[in-house]
Length: 312
Ligand code: FAD
Ligand code: MG
Image (tube, rainbow, N blue to C red; front, side):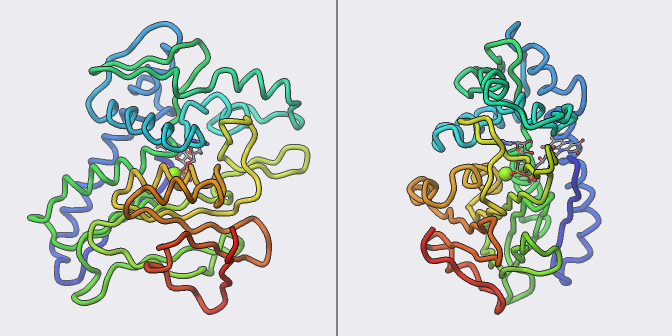
């Protein structure tokens, strides 16, 4: 999936590590082969190729990803919307051609007309994109989904304590060591080597980060990041990174992308209705500061050098 995966177990369960790592690799490769838009003939590629033409049959996991995508699109008012695929390519990501100059509003509008999760129809083992030129991009949700699949498949009978990390989409079971919880750092988006703080992950919890530093293009001397606002068609500006903690990895993945689009103020009422879900947002303004949604502070320890933003 264009990234790295790691699995960790405590020293006491180290003898299981090879078996767990092999199993995780197998699950991730299987998910990638059905979900990737970079693999011609994958289920999602077939769905995209048949846009506006026909419904395609989909396997249970792919149907799951599509249904969850619609769910997160609905609850975020379309801030999360994987049917942004044509826009993602238009802006030069995912092997799309880089625009020679900053596009004008009319060009963006023309592509935007092909976007909308309401035109993705999922029913009983089939899926369809209603109009020609539409596309589904699983980039904002599928890694989280794959982590959950892997987490459930590698049961407690195999290892009691485990941390799975697929490109920053993380889910934990148990503890890192007896009496010491799993912890992950939240990277400073302006400095590869420093952290804004650490997150404590209790049993079963998940975390994901969306950052503007992950993938960028430069058009007319200006940088644009890979997360697109599906309501305007333009890459989101003003946010450097969003970290979401949640009770499962697919929610953390989808919501990190959604909160990146929404911004802290608009995200607050949505996140507050989601049990166990919290976010941390770093605006794209130096020096770096971090905003914590109510409840996020319970899991987060601020690094000495970092500053908290009180008003989103
Ligand atoms: P996230 O914030 O989790 O997701 C951002 C991504 O979601 C964007 O890159 C875009 O694809 C999409 N997106 C943008 N705006 C929105 C929005 N408003 N709502 C919903 N989604 C949005 N990369 C490669 O370089 N080569 C590969 O072969 C490759 N294969 C992949 C196969 C699979 C199955 C998956 C899931 C990903 C693959 N990737 C590959 C990576 C992919 O192209 C993205 O870069 C990656 O998923 C971005 O993840 P993230 O965690 O950085 O960001
Ligand atoms: Mg995401």
